[in-house]
View: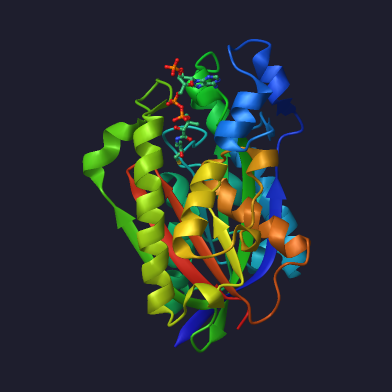
Length: 308
Ligand code: COA
């Protein structure tokens, strides 16, 4: 049996910081409304999906002590590829100078957890070290004059190096879920901009996150008290708070970066994971609960025992 272990991490965000006050200059909104309804204070806007992914991947490789030549495969979770054809992952592969497989995975904001499980599957059938990246430029597909969505979206990337280990490894449990009958709730047609039924997404998000997280904990043989750190998708602070409350996981045990980064879709979980690791909140043997939801609808959770 071959399991996985996360051995390196990196992030990249565009230089340009846009505060709520900046948005209020052109939109009928306010810092007070945005903070109260979403928890977001500022976000980074700009760059390209491949460019941010390359930067995050290079930092992850450095932190793992790996060279690009040692990586077998690259999985890029994104819902905002540079183009339709080709995929964006080959550009990232070329940009960092690796050889081997590279492909895009679009599971919207659940993409990083879907990618983690995909990476574990590749390792199980023989892959060597992998790069898993979540990278997004949501601002490119957003009508920045639409206050309902412009205040939420952001750009950024997070990457991890995943290595094979003998034995079960870190991934204790996982579930991947989708319901295409709900695709109308959050969508972007070719050439169009993002549409979101915010209220309905909010209502369903809390329900599915709680259900999926509870199943992942049960499958890992753990209860809420055993979870040392929850790493949720950063869509709205109120969704994270409601999920924590229903799961009986204190909010202090969640990694929350939405105030600084906004909603970066598939990049949000690796951004929050990176923040927790680099601020010393993750220790060997800790149980981490990763959970995401998004367009599709898709939702997914995984429990990791940190480098166990
Ligand atoms: N600034 C000020 N007012 C705003 C606003 C903004 N940026 N956006 C909406 N409003 C107004 C609305 O027009 C509405 O006014 P009205 O009552 O006069 O009609 C009022 O605020 C309430 O709007 P509503 O859409 O009901 O707000 P909400 O409390 O549901 O918050 C979201 C909106 C988008 C923040 C919230 O629904 C949400 O976060 N949903 C989930 C989004 C999500 O998770 N998306 C990502 C999935 S991956």
